[in-house]
Length: 363
Image (cartoon, rainbow, N blue to C red; front, side):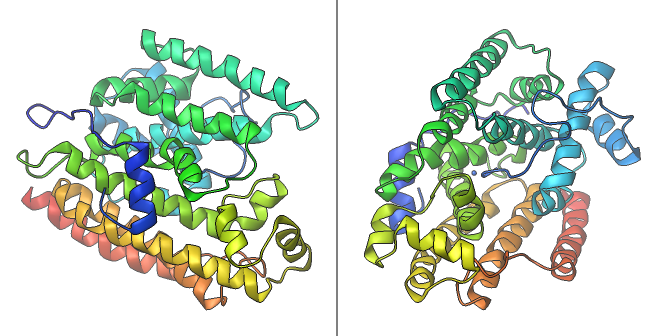
């Protein structure tokens, strides 16, 4: 990037809270599951397939050692981030490895938190995460890491001039998962989501690019942050039961109290596989909050480079379709996991692919 170089966005956690509450304009996402081999024990990188090799060549990543981290990050994305990976396929090949690197790092850090031995005390788990985080931040300052995925994200940060504080903010939110199990007010939750979701959207911006250099990056940043929040709230609604299993509630306590719901009621719904009417009303209320964020994020898609738009449109549509599925379940997120069918994903992505190919021919 030359004249289109990314500048730091003036988007704050306070702005995130305001946007999320009232839907005004100004991204993981919590990432679920385990990395291959578990955190710190990633499987050795296999030889990249034809698709990965093509993407690495297009991105100008030729060093074999550097390629290893990008290949591992791509594998994590393909294995665990079905919708995210599918949307990324609509980006130009030269951009995909860097998006995979950001996903891989977020996934890896999140899994470290979730996979720490639960028999350890909270203080000991926090101490171990802090030690790992300090090492990464030191690597971030030096620009080099011994861990393949961390090295890939450091390379991505350097190439695209991504503000390092976005990664530091992300790590801060991941640490909160070790000590915070619920949030009284939405503003409290928004502070967590700033690091776990909003900055994910901001990290993506320089890779996605902006179509018009006269448009200030901060304007794109507000939409990008809202999109990250929308995706995360969608995950929170879909995964209430899974989060309960980890002892966490990512719906504000003030919302629970509004509908006469408490942790015990959620646990009963988890045990029986059926949500009560107050819980359904709670989910419907928070679902509308998420819808507002999707609406707020939508105008930003036309501000990024033309070749990046179909990736975002596809992700916006498919993640939003999870909310549609929750509504079809009458907001009972405990009866089954809301998901988008494969035919639906293929239909949406197929149309996006044709548009993306056309966009590349005229860019």
